[in-house]
Length: 80
Image: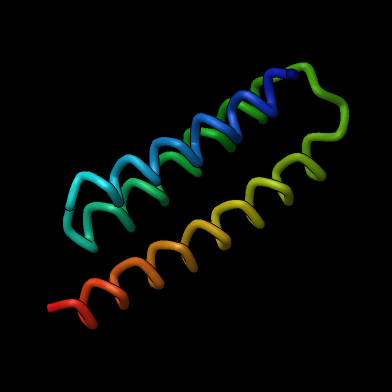
C-alpha cells in the first residue's frame, strides 16, 4: 500500500471513529475539513509528480465522507 493509500485509509478511519464516538455534528464536520486540509498540505510538500490529481482524489473523498456524515446524523435524528 502506498503512502497516499495509507493516508486515505487513515483519513476515512478517523472520520468513522468520530462518528462512532458520538461527537457532535459540528465537531465531525470540523474534523473532516481539518484532516482534508492536512492531507492537502502533505500532498503539496510531497515528491509526487501528479499532485493535482491526488488532491482531486482527496476532494472526492472529503465529499464522500461529508455525505456519510450527513447520512449518519440524519439517521440519528430518525432514531431520537
